[in-house]
Length: 275
Image 1 (cartoon, rainbow, N blue to C red):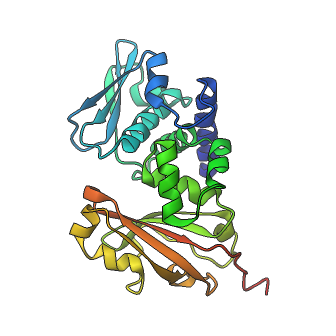
Image 2 (cartoon, rainbow, N blue to C red):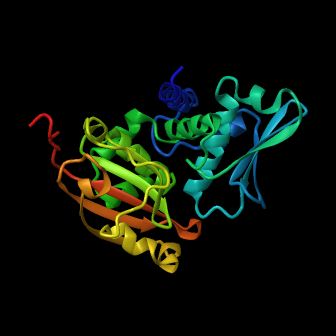
């Protein structure tokens, strides 16, 4: 099975679990789902990970780091570990029936297929597509709209931004970077479908002309979660993209030392080949 299909199925599984446990409005409460499955959830002083799924004597428990910055990040961490619990084959592969603890890094940080599936499960669980679309259609675009959705959904800023980008009808890209280098990127279909556009690869350098580069150069401003709003162009970020002006909003992600950039435009883009 192709990787992207597996991730989409994991996302759908998360949405099905939310519906199964009666969540028809926001926020979805992963802690309540864990409780109904007799999974104990506790904050712990964890080192080197954000959360872990624990298996002992036939029972499961979830630990999340007590140092997580906000409730949205805690919710995502719990939802991620629930992904390992609910997704077929995960618990078997992780524990093989033997007591132990499986640690998970921060959201969307790992290249391990199981971790990426659990991330997508968490997105589907906390931000079911149908519910999210109805809310996002009533919000503004860009970072301000994403922050409004974050408040409504009780989720982390990063997961909300990613969900927004993948469901937006307009050209939208969300880029998480560290030290002015790309960590990962999600795009709306309006960008993904441009035939000549080259995806941003992990480790790619960010243009010094971008608003993001200005914030990336100052760790203190990143830790203060400062926001900078400016203008950019899609071709400044993506090789093969048309020369189209876009809004560039960037926010520091606190002690993680990362920046989150939202590129967005309300107008449709034209593929040069179509011209």
